Image (cartoon, rainbow, N blue to C red; front, side, top):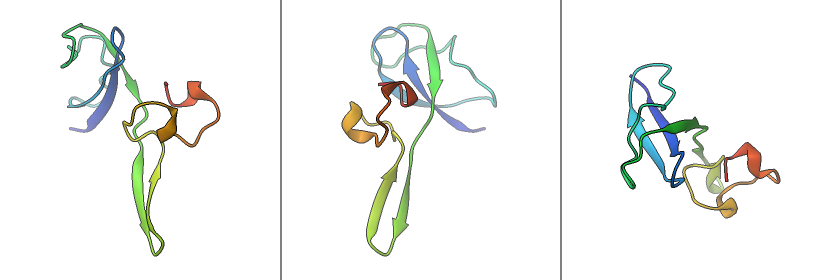
Length: 77
């Protein structure tokens, strides 16, 4: 079973959930506001290199400071 990252449709809280393959989040309950309904978002990851650790993608951070994209629709913020 994979761990997916979701974003609450009501409050925007991002959370992870271990769930069945292909889960879309429509029936999930937000752990922050208890609203039902979320959508799956792209999770980021980190990469270790000789120069240190580099964060790739959104990685569940909040705000566009955590994203290297210039288009907020690509990361959901």
